[in-house]
Image 1 (cartoon, rainbow, N blue to C red):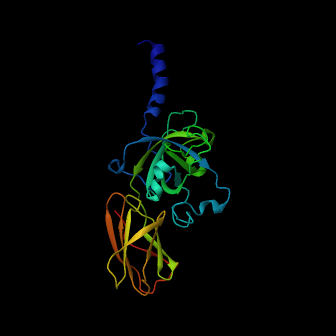
Image 2: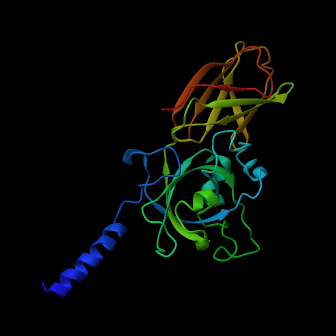
Image 3: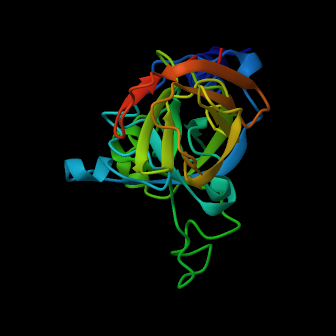
Length: 265
């Protein structure tokens, strides 16, 4: 090999190594999933929004309310309809990484976000035009604080790869009780493992296990007089795992209160 060729190889090798580095070195979330927890990478696109006002972090189609107060912060995403699944996906965790565009991608980075909102389709535009969240597009809308962890903001509609991962949460699942009279609504947050909730049962001290219906997002409801009874919950995740928490709320619970139960591993 000539001296000129050796010099070219030495200049090119660092760039090649950078391109082949596994893109999980930096996470925008206090979690590092193991390989056993990951599904296969799939293709999607991601855009961002700027939170100009603190109220922008409140609300959403999953019903989590104040995302900062409930522990989700800016590591969140709104999902297009093909991913959202009419709300069952709420609470699921995804890892995203930028791809294909060396001008805008930040090499060696990925982010982990929780599904907290729905990106509604806009049928006034084509799916390959302004209707970014139209079927059949897999699309994520991120807070700009999360987007800028993997790409330069000028990238706009960025090709990404994503994969579903298991959620890691601190503390137990949280149950916020609301309603009036015999109408009982329970918002379930901070769910580890699969992150989503597929079925819920509730039990008072004077009842058997009663199935709850999904009201919207991760708000579950039932018509039953459970006042002055300690409340227990049976939660089934989308992966079929079930966990039972007994006496989550004491007999003197009141509407508007939150309680903590067991957590998925």
